Image 1 (cartoon, rainbow, N blue to C red):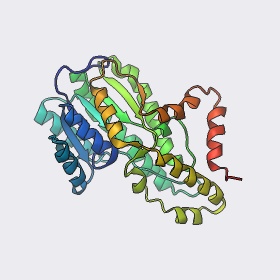
Image 2: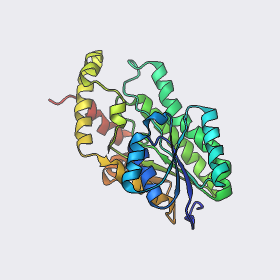
Image 3: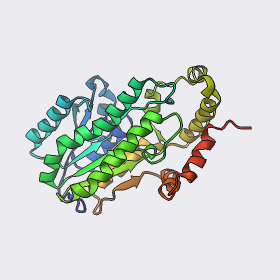
Image 4: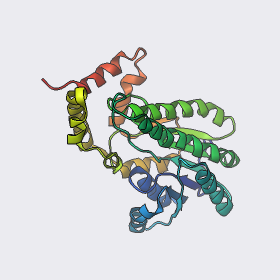
Amino acid sequence: MTANTPHPTAATVLITGASTGIGLATAVAVARAGHTTIATMRDLSRAGALRDAASAAGVDLEIAQLDVTDDESVERAVARVVAEHGRLDAVVNNAGAAAVGTVELLELGRFRDAMEVNFFGVVRVTKAAMPHLRASGGRVLTVSSVGGIVGQPFNDAYCAAKFAVEGFLESLHPVAATVGVGVCVIEPGAVASEFVANAGIDPAAAVAEAGPYAPAVVAYLERTARSFAAAQSAEDVGGLIAGLLDAAALPFRVQTSNAARAFVTPKLADLDGSAVTAITRGWVTPAA
């Protein structure tokens, strides 16, 4: 399974953040495709939903502990996979966390936490996996976001981390290809999962605590509710990711829906940034 050649047999795949949402759906889809699937999560007490989903789908997968913010946890998990299965063919960097707020109101600790999980977690897992992926001609598949292309109001910390992910992997992509490792970033838009719920947003409290930003918060929350009303399913995204394991030609950047493609197109074709900022300015302008 090199950068442009799918693996001829079942691959051994490690997935992070598999307790809910995209990670859970990806683990089930990868196992259904016949691959050896090691689905990891920080807290194994939250494995029940994944076990139930795997049982309902009639697939077997392994569940293991891995905390992407902990060097020893990552190194131990990767070493165990290689020791028990003899190889590692792909990692799916999925673990992530929301961080909603703007810089004046958001504690610096929230910025650091967002970078630690969403960015350094990807770096940590990729670094540990690379020697084994070189040996197998494997792939690094990373769940980024349309927020890794377009900076979004009240997502200062989250988008900063996802922008960093995109820059890191875009830089790694040509270098990894020289040693036979494929690199791909996956960019979902709105997805119907527990990700937003896990952000712990209380809309009334968010508005009450926003001070001079209250009108912008109201407009943002209204726009966000509309976008998630038509959200893509986590199963759709998981199936797409599973398909990338066997794709004959692995692209660097993949949007998971037409909505996601439409969302990032202005930025990717916007040399001076004026088009994308004109769009997002409307997100925080209260309706007349």
